[in-house]
Length: 302
Image: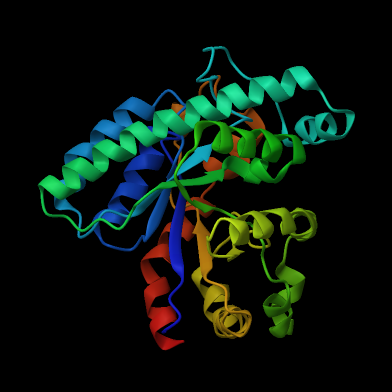
């Protein structure tokens, strides 16, 4: 079978302009899949915009629940959340039962909220004879929080208790070897992102085990070491080695982009002030948008 990576965009629903940028990529047929955030103020308007445009899409991309536990309002109880990657990590090892029970309720609420809109998207697509491939629920998360032990345990309990038909859970398991094949690029990698790569690799084994047990693909993901800076120039140089690595290990590859730009005037209390300005409102989002629009040329060239 010919190797064909999944070109993915995170954060649909983060802000209205973020959603517009992603939707434009969808209309041009550049995205195989997207993730939807359902706990930000622009969610309803973003979904209405998508519903209206589905009839104009070449196909309906696969749609994942983008669990958001570090920004936005709680879907479960409506209050503003106060979690970070760090304190969820600490609560995993000090074991905070109250946090665990809250996470189960919040994760369940977000999954069902997105599943409802995905079902509506599929209905609209099928009514308008737009190709659809999705069969079940797909799950990933904002800043990959679902790999944090307390979050992972809560997620798996929700899936089991609700008997959810899950067809995909993202494993942010990013091979590090292809990045070092191009030695001239090594000094340009962000050290913090390298550390994230190693931390998530450490926790990725449980996702592999769960996927094997439940007949889902064990995957690789590309989008950590270059997170926020997925530019087409470096992608072009790294891609041949990444393709060979994935083929050798017989794993499909998700290439993760953030092609949607949040505007400064869209800033709101539900957004983390540091991450929104450093990442979601960064001009690097324009660079990633450009990469999405050019990556098929890179893939075809191999």
